[in-house]
Length: 341
Image (cartoon, rainbow, N blue to C red):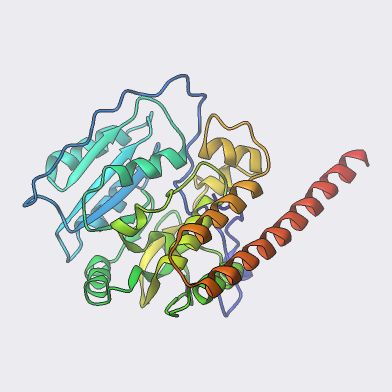
């Protein structure tokens, strides 16, 4: 999961509002997990009941903003969807709020784990429970404009080469007031898988908010990936693989609000070890660069593309890994010298 923290508004460059917040679930304090809850299999819907869109909302102790997020989803002008809430063993009023919404609207499906199984697990769980043709993640503290789903569905319905449709983003504070508007500049429309990967990585370096992660995606294509694996920055590896698999379409209007508040994971967990424990409570720590390399090499190997594109993608992936390793080595050496001083 991403580590870079949200900057103050005055620190944001004019060309691109640069920030990195975990594009993964919000602060989910990871207790030591002794055993997994025995999960009941998801209910199977008949063909007439299957919604066109599934929205996955992973949550842990989200009582402060949960109602606002659910209200924004239930107010969508496109109504053929299911909202899947996966509660990671919350200890606050989250369960009561979710059950209230599930009782009020049949589109809301609530599932609860007995203990916190980690942020990565909870993201994957929402996808496993989904049945729609299209899928998107939505965090419990964010908001969507009423027309977001309608606009995204229209693009996916008419442009089969597009596998991710996302809108531009407004950063809001804990009270819902706008801080600034963020433009992704992330339309990936080239016929070349290498070109799309190269552009995505450049986008991630220049504008690393990773709101692409909250786009509406084709569930069939997303299901071919390993989703969010249990290591830091796994969402970036997922988006890299999706960039190889198809086109990304960007809606220019700002139809999605992401909330910056003290409870988001990168503000609560400020070290790589803490973030790794948040993603996977059973993690023993260690450098996540090997996970990133393995995930990206696997994607380049299995995604269909021409031999020239595949060779270029292999070389580019190794170049990126070398850059990552050098940066991590410098950070490690800096920490070591500071301790000795």
